[in-house]
Image 1 (spheres, rainbow, N blue to C red):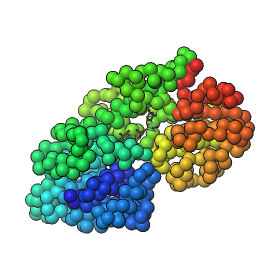
Image 2 (image 1 turned 180 degrees about the horizontal axis):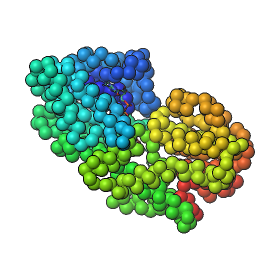
Image 3 (image 1 turned 135 degrees about the horizontal axis):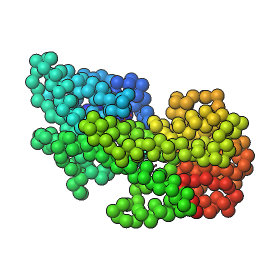
Image 4 (image 1 turned 60 degrees about the horizontal axis):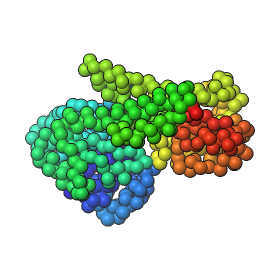
Length: 441
Ligand code: NAD
Ligand code: UGA
């Protein structure tokens, strides 16, 4: 089939590349010429395991192309994915300007039937606004071309995006139009061959499903983070509690890890947007409001622990930070807990040396060479002469590091384990002062 992906970020690029892998002919459009230049030079602008190979293979096969040419992109696809950003507006609601601009650019140029697919995370009712925007543009041209609007929210996780797209738990399709549903079934048939994972519903329920899913996942995390605070006080170990409750199939093991708080481009913004949308309807979301507040507090928890150990004035203190990305296997630092931690430690007068396995260019872009913050070429280099080490992102290479080396490099053997990667008993045996999250034993 002929597919266009508008927006070549995490979602648009993965969607375009994975659909090309299944034999579709895909054109990916972006308004950012730098991204398209990188892609046309055989590289990808993000770190996403497995994606580069798929992109290169499909470009070579002639099934995947990248362009900034809107006319060409709109002309190409029968199925038009909109995968542009929906950042928070000043009041927390989702800013739809990019989605609606993409819709308008389709309406201004289309010359035949299109299935317009909202893949961005958008509030309930957005499909109606997309339809209205396209209709308005068609009317300006005196055209009454037929088109359909479908909601097909994306559930991929960064760092596992290809795997998630290729083996989806479910494919949600919101549609009130049989022809469009047929197109979507055909497009996704390679992904649902063994087991029909497509759930077709009305447009509004599909749009809602995406927010409800992210809100539920964020809720689990904040719940566990609060349980961890209590566990620490009452002398229990949240890691044992996690295993204990996860074994109940009604609860399950996933997304129960206490840590330094959730970050990323989606949970924080989607939780905010849902709270805001509900306020507009006169329904205060009390649970979700608490989820957000708990997360704000959680992002500062490691700093609180540092302050308890070293005092509130940290001038003259120097700390090593391991991990800056909001989670492992990505270079994305949007809303990363590390950003809050860096800012707060610097504000209290500390100096910092930080290392991340892939996010160093992004850290350079966002934080630069700030006076008090040194970006280091290796994990070992960051440790040199530090008063303590803070582990913020659980990259695999930090799981069983050279503990003797850490001890030799630090001024004193103090570690703050923001992702519960190291067993307290082992750390004690090795002679570390070890502060973790919710490990009160
Ligand atoms: P992103 O910021 O990585 O990419 C968006 C891209 O759209 C940018 O490259 C931007 O230049 C481009 N763009 C903006 N307006 C355009 C236009 N009119 N025409 C063409 N290109 C345009 O965003 P993302 O992380 O891929 O997220 C996109 C959407 O998908 C958001 O709504 C997000 O909530 C949702 N989502 C993201 C993820 C994720 O893991 N990142 C997962 C599921 C859903
Ligand atoms: C999340 C969802 O998992 C995806 O299903 C969704 O498509 C996506 O948001 C989106 O809408 O953009 P993502 O943000 O890429 O994916 O990453 P997650 O693995 O969900 O992690 C989000 C944050 O939660 C990270 O900061 C991570 O460290 C934290 N987290 C996750 C925990 O603190 N504990 C956990 O148990 C799991």
